[in-house]
Image (cartoon, rainbow, N blue to C red; front, side, top):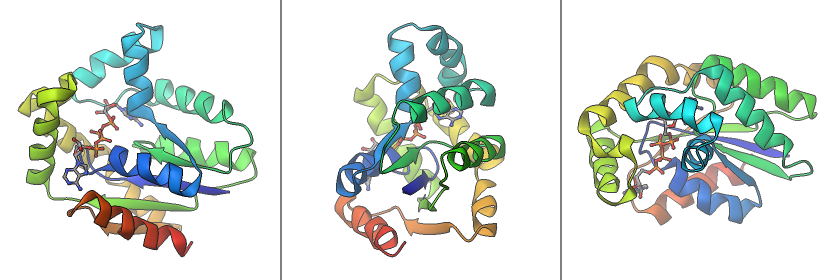
Length: 190
Ligand code: B4P
């Protein structure tokens, strides 16, 4: 099985690239952000608890996120592999993912990080905010808070995967096609 963690700050292009790569490599795409947004739209209990955190640009608590991720993976028994987009975002989530995949006799194959400067991230997210209807893209203060949360809580995971020899950094600035090619170059060598 090939299990990819697509990593990077908010707006780095994770969702954009995961949508392309899932078809190219026949992987199940799990975006924690999309699952939360689906639940918010349908006003489920999970959605209601996630919304308050997301609207402020904070992370949804690990307990809630991990439970949801486990359910999403279990739904796809028999998959050839997964592309995790937006998960893990904390060390506790990375540990939970390792344990879940181990139970299934597999592991994370690689963590591929999209590297993009902060000012470009802000620009991309505010641009998307004009049409996406996402409250967390509309307000510059919230966008900047998401980027700060990334540096405070999530960036540490680079070291976590580096220690395991699974970390790959890719330049996330360029056309969408160029970036897909850079990511494919890494995946093809795994
Ligand atoms: P996510 O939905 O994961 O949102 P994101 O970090 O903003 O990444 P996204 O995938 O949307 O951005 P993309 O780079 O594709 O998370 C939202 C919130 O959910 C979090 O803040 C948190 O509250 C919660 N959450 C999610 N997962 C969680 C977890 N594991 N634990 C706790 N909480 C969690 O795209 C950005 C924009 O850039 C797009 O408009 C795109 O068109 C554009 N773009 C992409 N590539 C480009 C390129 N090459 N050039 C120019 N523009 C590009």
